[in-house]
Structure formats: C-alpha cells, structure tokens
Length: 165
Image (cartoon, rainbow, N blue to C red; front, side):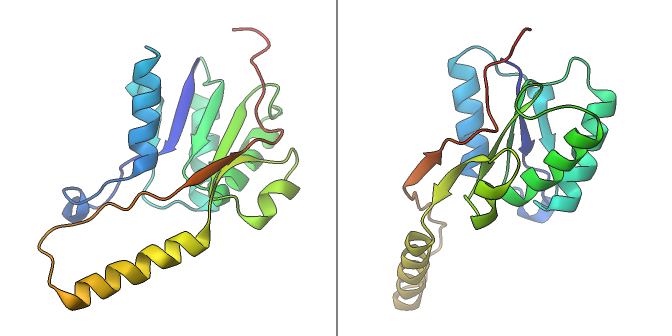
C-alpha cells in the first residue's frame, strides 16, 4: 500500500506551465481512488536516467523509513539504476521492494528478476508524431495537444505481494 513514484515533475521552471505527464496523473488518480495517496512518496527527478535513479534510490533507501513497498519508475532505464541501489543495500526484488517500469525496453525481460513494465508501441508514437507535424505544417496551432496511445502491462517477476506490513 506504500507505492512510490520515482519521476514526478521536477522540471525546469520555464516548462512547468506546459508540462503534462500521463504517468504522474495516472499514479495520483490510482492512489487517490484507493485512499492511499501520499505526496511524500513522490520522488522527483530532472532527468529520467539510470544514473539519476541510482542516486535517488540510494538516498531513499538511506533516509526514508518506513520504505515504500513498491516503486513505479518513469522508465525502464531508471529501473536499472533502482535495481542496483536496492541490490547494494542487500534488499531483494520483489520480496522486499517491487518495481514497475515504463516503456518495455528490450532489456527489461532480461533483468534479474525480469521487469514488470508498460509497453507503448513505438510505431504508434511515430504515427502520432507524423500526424502532429503534418497538422502543425497545415495550420499554426496556438494550443498544445495531448495524444493518448494504447499501452499494455507486461507482467513479469519484479512485483509480488508484500510478505508483511
């Protein structure tokens, strides 16, 4: 029930007004619907990289008590960094902490344990990008568009029920 988000909106000030990330919105909505939303479990980072996630997870493991039982991380590269920090602390995935990534990178299924993640078909991203470029070329839009793409949850072995809370 203590599910953390590693990602969030730590973005440069000049972009904050325009920023919208469906991962953040979905996380907050899911947690609020279940009455378990806790803002202190949102760990923001400027870059969604392995290195940043490793450093952030190392800090979380040293300073947060009680630890979250699960993390939703912004992408699969971040999950790699989180995995390493968790292993170095002597904790196990998923027995001690569950991890869910995003993007289903090709290496996700080869991680130990294989990473549970969401898959977004890159061809749909390409189609949407081309559509937006063509539309922008045809008329100068004065507003931003949000494009929703289909996703699929790839359940692997990085998540498990918590043994005891």
